[in-house]
Image 1 (cartoon, rainbow, N blue to C red):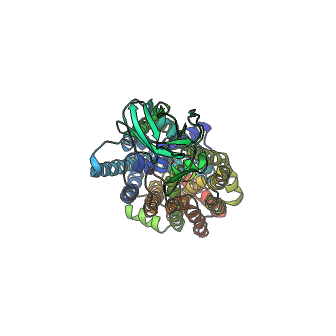
Image 2 (cartoon, rainbow, N blue to C red):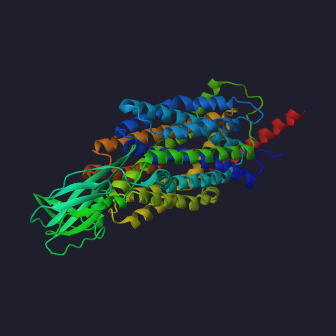
Image 3 (spheres, rainbow, N blue to C red):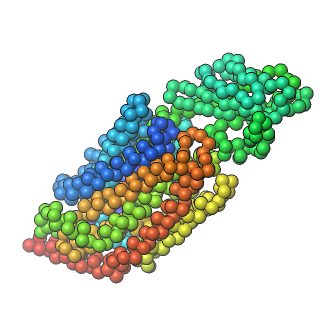
Length: 579
């Protein structure tokens, strides 16, 4: 039988890691997509959506420590933490689907539905993820084996993030239908012409007599609860030719008084009207009314249905992965046999552990940063860059950078110590996160490069944070003789989720204060707010984590000493138990 210090097998590491893939299916759907899902699909105000997330974090303040306390006192044939993977997976999967479902309950009813399902989902997530996180600390007592295990964990976790950030929008579009539109539609009046609906598939346009220039009008299609809007541009020339070309050029229309002038090409138009299909037609001023078959080129996607079906897929995969984690893992580090059950003693041990307090503060600040950036990045690409689906490439490149750099965590920790690696990671990545503010909307390559460098610098800190939480639990046992792994991890995760809720709420509030309007051309102040949320603010916050870590007392020398003395105690306990 393996002891607590035996090296973990590849099978155990991979089996444990798949649990984080399952966790990321929900965590990253919430982190990257829930805010824009609430505002642009379910129709909630941005400030309301952000407030819902903040309220959920206050709920977590009570739930997370309670789960840690309960799991520490759980005794079953499967151990303390593994049973939660087995019995918590089904509620987790069901609530994930319900949270991304959009029943029409009216304005107040929708707010209530979103709040209840989101809070219940986060509760289900806590009941399965907190014991899962604690499990990694009791599979081995070796800090470097833990670093290796957490490296596997986060490679698999970021693979889940890769799927969510790289495929979720494509899956939503695919599952959302993409049916050709054959239903009726509404048309706004043009500036310098007359627009009429010929049938359910085409329009007719006739310019005013003598008008030469660029005219524009919009049409709107509604199909069930899905809506699509597009802009049509008609270039009226003074030539006698009646030839017109569809989708040849995407002109930008600038209104000056009553005059419309051709001002540029596609990118400017895309920035001005991000949702436009951008149909462009040419017509002579003397030509007969022009029939425009615009509808045949457009499709409509039911994003509500698409997101729901995407979550059904992720929920089913989560059930499979959590079961694999349950079957492939074992718990080997146990509390001292003489330890009595005392909540008061456990809480005192926690709040007097300076190492844990520092890690909790780092968790709050860093997760405020993650939440703000992740919530705002979809807005950044939709409204600033003007290429909504490019957010998936941005996220995919960042995730690949994380996966590539994650294996550096263990060798760097052995060479320089967990604390020093974390400090360097915070400073370097923070600088490059801030730099994302600088590129213009056309300089996408620079945006991608800054993000890749920031994520590679940040990667080693990810598994090391969780390794240090386990070390803090060891430190508490080393100093007091008491072990409360579940409480340490649940309290740390509570701090991180509090930061996540605060960050998401701040993102919603900043969008509101910046005068953000869903599915519309954004003002300069809204664009500035969005840019700050993905760059400068997160960068400053993450760099500040380095200041906290200066005071983290568990260095490489202390870690090695703790390991030696705790192993000696456990060996002595084992020998006494055999007598």
